[in-house]
Length: 138
Image (cartoon, rainbow, N blue to C red; front, side, top):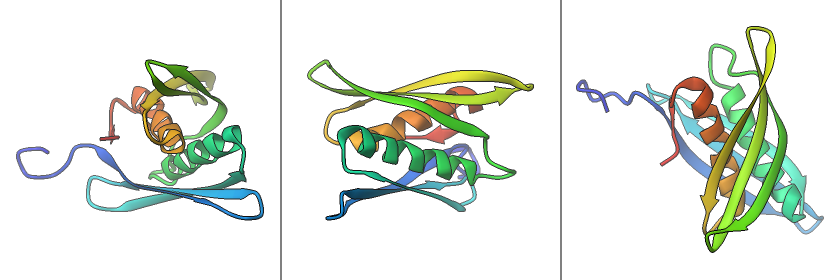
């Protein structure tokens, strides 16, 4: 918070994940802007471990793309969950362009209880590296 009581960062506001009987899933990520505005991203996927992780990550990518002025042009290149430190570490790779040059960014999150939410958070952590820590994932 700044001295005027206004947040200086975008906040990871809400995450929701649903599994369906037809073998599909859906994730929703809501980000809250500095003035209270909300940016929603959703994604659909398949009910496999990799499909669920990708679904959570894609929802975060879509929420970031919704941010003004035109969001950040980014693409999810890959996602991986590995076992480390008695927990699941989710790692994502994003591709963006800076000055017309493709750039890859990595984000990671130690997902103790929820790897799918961890996938969304890993995307936001990678994005913070690009945007100068403007998204608060706490």
